[in-house]
Amino acid sequence: MPELAALPPWRSMLFVPATSDRFVESALRQPADALQIDLEDSVAPDQKALARERLPAIADRFAAAGYDVIVRVNRPWRLLVRDLEAAVRPSVLAVSLPKVPDASMIRAVAEILRELEAAAGMAAGHTRIVAMVEDAEGLHNMAEIAAAHPRVHGIIVGAEDLAVSMRMAVDDDALYVPNVMAVAAARRAGVMPIGFVGSVADFADPGEFRRKIERARRLGFEGAFCIHPKQVTILNEAFAPHAQEVEHAQALLAEFEKQVAGGRAAFAFKGRMVDLPVVDQARMVVARHEAIQRLERKRSAPR
Image 1 (cartoon, rainbow, N blue to C red):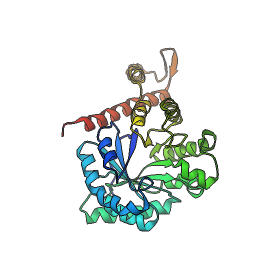
Image 2 (image 1 turned 120 degrees about the vertical axis):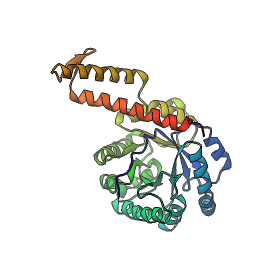
Image 3 (image 1 turned 135 degrees about the horizontal axis):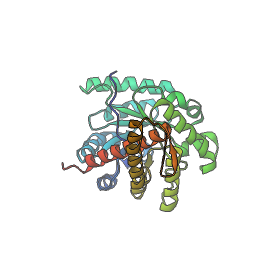
Image 4 (image 1 turned 30 degrees about the horizontal axis):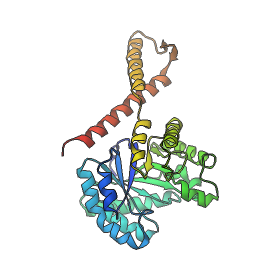
């Protein structure tokens, strides 16, 4: 497979039930980085075929409006394969795979995606994968899942399903270790850590949600799924470098260039010693800021 192009840093990935015209229209008014068409939990069992039929038109409409498009598909395999057949199209950049138990599932899905892309005349590797770890087996195999295939773009812990599998509470104590494991697995594999310590279903208290997302950023997460429009702005703000962070990083890098030109690799900057790890942090802040700016320009470009 050719080297895959890097995808944007999605801060907010808003779920949109495929069977709801009201939610589809609402999504088109939101500043989400990506719209995630849901074929799974928000769709009733007797509506799965309808959701699948509606998917192509919704995906094309979202993409035409400037959004990046993700599709959350179903398990078991009979539903999953049909969903993938509907989801593989130029307007869909990634599929979210629920209940991934091990790396072999990722590789099997990647093979199906390759066949579907070839049949559609699409570039190999167009459709990326977001792996959802939602049971004890997946938790045990998380590092292998994250590194299973070049198509994997990110990994996330599904709090509600994991709690059922582990017979644990859906709270900060129970979910802290699985989420830190997810960040470590993602960083080891070079993929995006998605999520926060908590449940995506908790949206009633915006202040508490913001606290969770700010904590998630400190833990190393880059973005999260969300189910309600009022969560989108919080995600976009909390997962982006603040203006002062960007200004500080840019000034530090400028000073670093001056110091290197003078033969020094370590120096004091605004009361703190600076060496290469600090410089690398500053570079990451600036790079993320620029990537987010590109994503926002794409969404706001005239159509």
